[in-house]
Image (cartoon, rainbow, N blue to C red; front, side, top):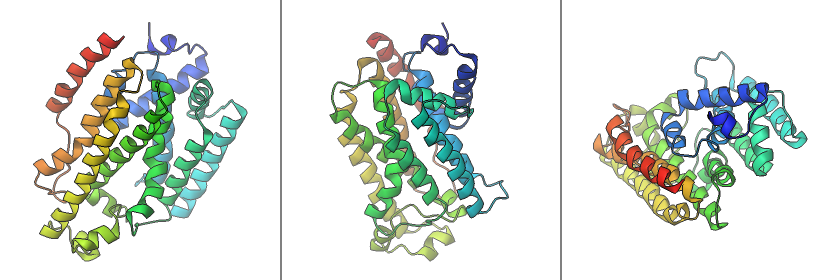
Length: 299
C-alpha cells in the first residue's frame, strides 16, 4: 500500500498536492526526507505537507535567480501566505501546496498561530539583515524553525505536553546549526544570523566576516555557537522519549544528522568560507540503518 493510501488520502486533487509537497521535500531537504522514511507510511505525507509549505515560502524569499525586489517578494509572500492562512480558517484550499497543508492542519488540529509565526519570520528575512543579540535573533528563529517542531508533534504523537518544549528546542538547534554552516551563503544574501553582540565579544567585526578569512576570533565565536547547539540538543533529548514509539527513531536520526552539522564544521577546521560542511553519505547510512531497525521494531 502506498503512503497516501495508507494515510487515507484518496481524492485525486489532494493526492496531487501531497505528491508535490513530497517532491519538494525529496529535492530540497534530503536529510529531512531521509528521516521521514523512518516514520510509518501513514504519517509521512503529513510531514511532507509541512515541509512543502515551508519550502514554498522560503523559495519566494530566497530565490537568487528572481528579478523581484525585496519589496516585491514581500508582497508576493504576503499575498500567498494570507491566502493560505485564510484557507486554513475556512478548512479548504485550491492552492497546489495549501490544499495538502490545510488537510494536515485539520486532521491534527495544528494551531494556525504556528503558520502565522513562520510567515512573520519569512517576512523578516526581507527586512532584517542582522540581529544584535541572541534574544533578538530568537524572534526570527522561533518562527522559522521552533514552530516547525511544534507543528510536527501532533503528527508524531506524544504522551506529554513536555514534548512540545523539547520540540521547540530541537527546532532551534537545527536552525542554529544551519546558521553556523551557512555563514558565507548568508553573507551572499546580505544577512548575518550570528548575534552581533556575541561576535563582538570574541573580537569579530563586520569587516572580518566580509573579508571571508578565518581568524582565531571567528573560530572562537563559532565554537561558542556550536556549544549552544549541543546544549539545546542535549536538553531536547529527553523529549524524544515522550513521542509515540513509532516516531522516536525518526527524530533521533534527525537530531543526530542535523545537529551533526556542527561536527562537520569542526572536521573542516572551521573553514566555513572555503568549504561547505556536509554530512557524508556514510554517516547518513550509519545513522539511518540502526534507526530503521528501531523504527520497524517499534511498529
